Image 1 (tube, rainbow, N blue to C red):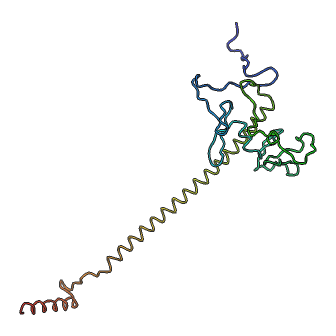
Image 2 (cartoon, rainbow, N blue to C red; image 1 turned 90 degrees about the horizontal axis):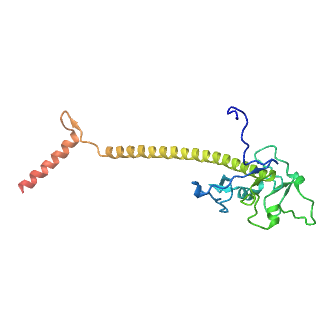
Image 3 (spheres, helix red, strand yellow; image 1 turned 30 degrees about the vertical axis):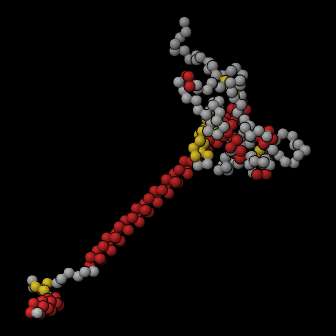
Length: 236
């Protein structure tokens, strides 16, 4: 009888003996899950969807679309991620640029030079706008070393994109806080000015001054002239 405390574990059914990994199947709606699709190409067989901030919008892309939309972030032959903020980026003279897109390839990774002087990266050379870097579907579920490198590269691009999105969102939030504080200050200044103008308007009509419980000399003269006119009108 097998010891329940034994360290022996059941081998993972997703691993093969040759070091490759079998990718799990897509989650189906019949199994209680929700089938997600890539927000760029619409595929539902992407297996993994990556969060990427693309054109100021948070999107979910399949692995191939992440690489297709960020050609300047990796070498299309070895799939090594290129961090533009890192000091370990190879110098430009060691990189070969594609003549049709921003893709940059390591000179050591290039195949034998062709007769044509213009270099094209694999996606541009294929002429297929839907070129797939990550060919993993129902017919091919084996995750070999190359596909693992592609998946890791896409994950690094996604992480860099989301880190940049955090910085951008924080800067935008701080900007809105400053704008709100400035607007509140302007509103308070406008309110104070309104109160000041209102008080000045009330002070333009001087009140009638009383002297020892009676009218002052000026108002007594005005009252006397008014009473005199009233008496004349009554006599007439």
